[in-house]
Image (cartoon, rainbow, N blue to C red; front, side):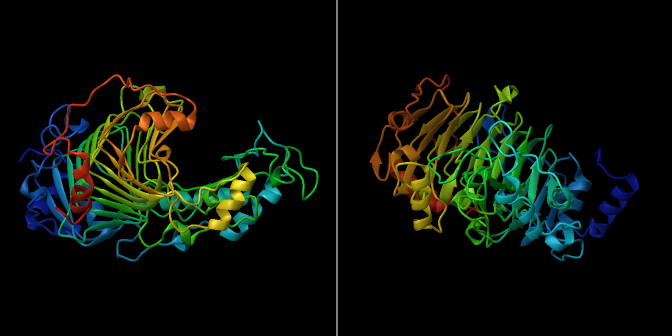
Length: 495
């Protein structure tokens, strides 16, 4: 057996002889779908041929795991060799080798304490300092911020698990879960399949307050001005500041040829509405909740050739980010992603939000509620209006986000957005082009491009510069069939 594994020859011999028992792994149980590869012509991921993942794995590198330790051991044992790792039950990535869940107290570094951190950087304290380029100083200093960073580093080292090349991760049965951590598919990694897994709750115990995020000197707010005068007048009376979390359920950074299929993504039981804003007006907008969750899937740093299909994204704010900076011009020519037959339900934004990438979005179903964004003659009035509504749902702000140098090709998508307009379906975020054909909004065929242009006042062209031809086994479904098909097939447990 000619295998180059990231373990010693002695360990490999022992593992093969003993069935890898010393690694806590269970062998000889196999999903009937474990060796399936990407369907012919199924999206951008097929451009260079099928994604095969670990389908060519030798018998000794087909594992069933039911704990974090067994999962990490299997990945370490196989390295970049073809491997199939089957998830049985729930894998809690924030647990120790004995299976005990690790929480904030296990990761925290003294003197960090959330209440002390909150008080140290409260706008009434921090924002009275002179503004820098029109914003409060965004780089926090002091012992609480240093302790927060050290605590966050402890958590990150434990809950972020790297996935190597030539890997198939697949859930067994209908109840396979990976919770409370991040799967990281990094630069240089390729040929990965992830299927039939319910991903939940990549919870950041140590979110960071950014006082300058979305900050604006807006004189419609009483007392808001750029220079501190007294407790009632100054930058502390201006809107702005956000909590930022660190972790996505899956992070694809620089990796290529990835297929994610029949998976479910959500915040699990710790939904964002349980962590409302903690500062007084005007730092109590809905978007200033204490953010413990970042994205569901992030695709960044020249990642490429990715298909996400038949998956369910629900009960979360920011779903999928493709390209994470306007300044990363090196992403041009990369970030080619197909999303089809997915169900986005009670999601607020980024379905996806795109920079630089050529993204094919077709036969997806989007269901949400725009009530709560706030209306009024100015930002202050809209803020007050949003507080009076106090929605529990994730407020739909945008579905498809056309960012700088993006080229989104949308076909036969279905949008049901209560209390919204078709302009919620497409937002111009420095984009210049966008194409749509055949999509419906609240049961009616619409011209998404025209409505987006009318809403933004910054016209985009339909000339995206490319035409998709990779549609997979179901080809392009008629729009009238999308809702029924997606609800029947999207999500974990439906293979």
